[in-house]
Length: 95
Image (cartoon, rainbow, N blue to C red):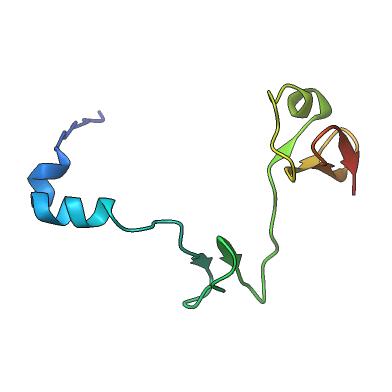
């Protein structure tokens, strides 16, 4: 038998109000690193590995075409065609 417990806390219960105000005044658009302690300052996501590859979202052509208003620069791996697809702002194309 599995037992579940739901715990609900307000942020105010965990951090004092002054700290919350200080956090909301900071720019959270900093770099994030996976596999690195020092992500490059000019990128939002810096992924580094010597033994693993990067895998973008995987979907079929039908699933890709169901994305409402994809962002320019979006990339997916298309399992219908087995190639990367790139959205140039007006159409999807193979890379």
